[in-house]
Length: 225
Image (cartoon, rainbow, N blue to C red):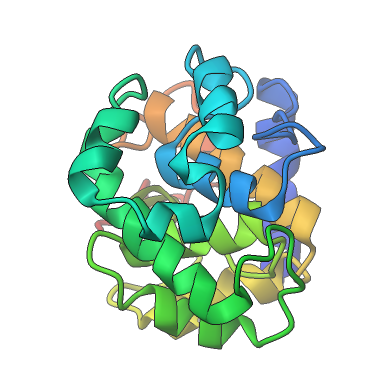
């Protein structure tokens, strides 16, 4: 069975169990900058704080990258208080805004014309942004063909014998992106669905009974990871 076939089968199994993911983490009319901050702050369209964040993205210093960088971290802490864990991310918001200005100026919906690898590399230099978060930003906010290699994605892939541990980051990235044919919608769906199955079954310890991917496990059971 090819990698693509395995991942396609996994997606079908997950979609059969779970409702189709909500494709809009933000309003379709949001700017690229707004989508970026929504992902960074973890506020989707269905989140209780969505309306609050929408207002802040219109009429506060986080509305534009230049305004955000011109605001002190302390002021941003106050501004982001209504957002869950917002104050803790104030310094990251400011650093991301400075990065954005370097890349795109104050253009709110720029063309992401450089290579995904160059954006990944530069964003990973920002303190507080882990590799999986960077890939989530680039996939969900910028529509670039990168896959968030978080703990859940690795656990599922290793326990099912799709990849061996240890694995280099670039090899894991290639496994998912090539296996999913670099399709942005498919990668978004699979990432969201893996997050759900990770919460329900595939945490630090596997709880395979009843998991929609149980039938895809090796005959000997889940592999160690």
